[in-house]
Length: 418
Image (cartoon, rainbow, N blue to C red; front, top):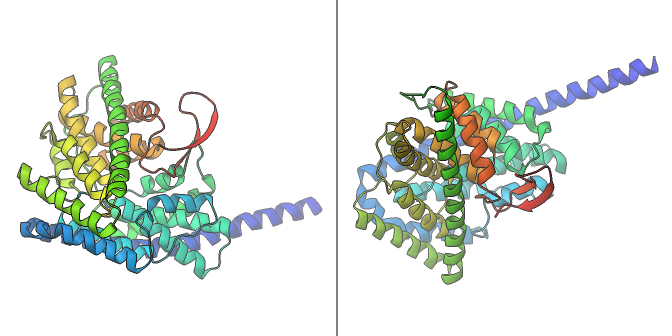
């Protein structure tokens, strides 16, 4: 009887914990879905206004000053961002709730005036703040706070991109490479699905691309896929180094936040006028579609790296993942065509491979390929992600990311991403 009693008590604890996290994650996902939807629509409207009124770009330097003013006003440093969210999962530091409205407004300003940035960095920061808010309301302890922050990250990411499985696995995988927080699987998935449902309710269409050609599996196509992925792994290193070095250089040379925002915005404005196209302002999802259609300029990936590095380095907000999609898709389309692969399919491989290389999350990247492109080419995407992950070394967009286990052998290394 005593053994039966203990087993019943254990089962009760599991059931109560399960429902506890379904409720907490559901609340977090609902709030994240609402805010993520509002954020998506705000960025979309800002982008539409800029595209229809090109003169807005001339105010980009002023936008840089405005963002610096907001962060100074609320006593938030320019370094407060995605790295702090990642750190909070491993430490007892809590994400400041004020970060949510700050990153929301600052990202909309960046897109309105034509800075080259994405949305995912903002999504992770919004989600982290929402998770902290919910955790504070329910007075969760530090360990549960870590899980609720992951729930927030998954929820807003899912609402923005319409990729609930990727959002779930990305939050679980990105914190510590080589270690997956399996205890967060149910909470993150619940939050992600609820947020996804909210975004669908408000008419936010999931991001999806149709591939016209998927090659036949053969030794030749496997080899070409591996070669393309290896090139993208090297490109991921270049992108991460350029992003980090540019930000460091701009902060070192221009110490005043207001002046740095103004000068960075001015440089992006002048570059746009010089090349006489607005393709590299904003997120650039329209160019991703063109790349998948097989239409791309050979220099597109390089120009996007330059525009994004200057934008983020100057203090503008948004994130680097959508620019990563742009860079990976355009390079993949160009390089894959030279290798003899279909340019559109190569663009898809490039998008997923570069994403994998810069965030060091191969499982989430493979799932991303399914949610964006369907499952028919899954073997090629798995090959590309595997090669890109291994050959991208210990570089990453997020310097607070821990590489727990070596990419080359079964060895515990526990180092920060470069």
